[in-house]
Length: 228
Image (cartoon, rainbow, N blue to C red; front, side, top):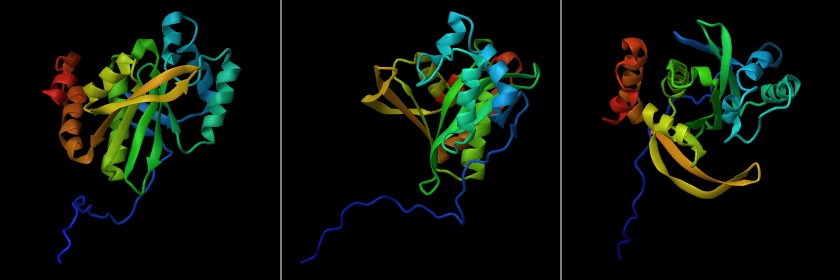
């Protein structure tokens, strides 16, 4: 009697070596990502994210913040320097020479060739600008081009409409809702799950470069380019 074979996934071509995101500077045309420096960065990061209701909305969907003083934030940043997952970076705006936000690589599974981009926030002054697009571009280049990862994830509170719109704008695909996934600051969080695959990155990278570097006054829509 012949046993029927069960379906299996396609074979994944191996690579010679797997690596982790580098704890180094990533420099673009508009911004630089640098490993967090609590003593150099804390004053500007605190200033751009505290002191008004609009600024402090940054922390609404985060598991931490706002902080009651620069020193409290500095202590939290110092704890972050000891972490390799999440691997935190300060976002430096090159023209203004200001610290304007933070990003991180996290949930890094190099053996599975995947990671997540998260802990992302920016000063309200630099939201909806080329800052976030170039920060994500640099991190996606590291993930897909150097590390040869197969998948990059983006997760956020399902109520965080701004983050959900950003994911789609950048070319991430919605994969579903994880109901009652977490408890954040004593409240329920349903998590919206997005991802980008290496096979999708080729076209998305071209669109991001066009929007960032060949698009005076951002006349083109990155959302339209990535979802057209």
